[in-house]
Image 1 (cartoon, helix red, strand yellow):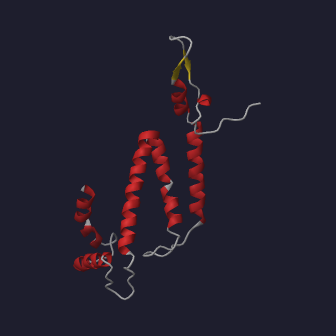
Image 2: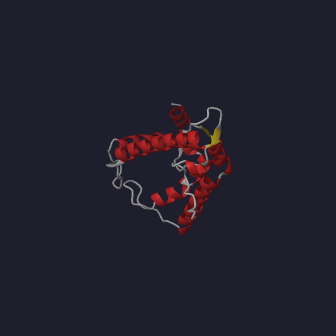
Image 3: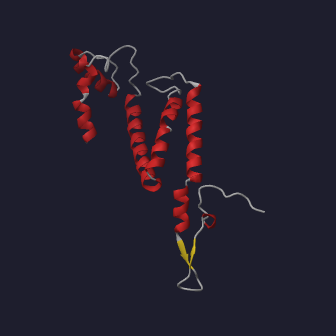
Amino acid sequence: MIQLLSSILLIPLAAVPHLGKVPLNQLPEYLLNGAKCFASIATQLDDRCEAAPVATVVYLTLNVIFNISMLILLKRAGALLAFIANTTTFPLVLIVFALPWPLLGPSKLNYLAFISLAVELVGIVVFRCFDKDRLNKIQIHTAQDEDTKDAEKPLLIQDRPEADCAKPATS
């Protein structure tokens, strides 16, 4: 609700030179044409408004799913990993926008998007596998010894079947 209200209040920024491309006197017509396009009513000959409602609903749905998944990641993995994972969205968006979308069409893709995505993904894997604080928290968990009530033994990461990184093979 706050985002809707702030978006409505910030609409006039579209008329500010170098921020928006719509003159202030054309802003109401621009908004009306956008609403008509959302209702699949083309206002110009080259408008492709037939897919606008579906594209908007898909965008809103994916945006909500993304935000919920980021909150879950923040809760379970911590702020640093959530931040690092969030940085991968930029190269992923560049790659996804290179696809032919109904209202946008494809954009040019630079090889640097793939390189930056690869570097960030390697960084996430290295962070998850070798984060000493996370590994220490896992090792601190204790399991009650079956034979003696007072004896506690540490639960090592090797004892956990759900460990994130595979342990090296020993012979």
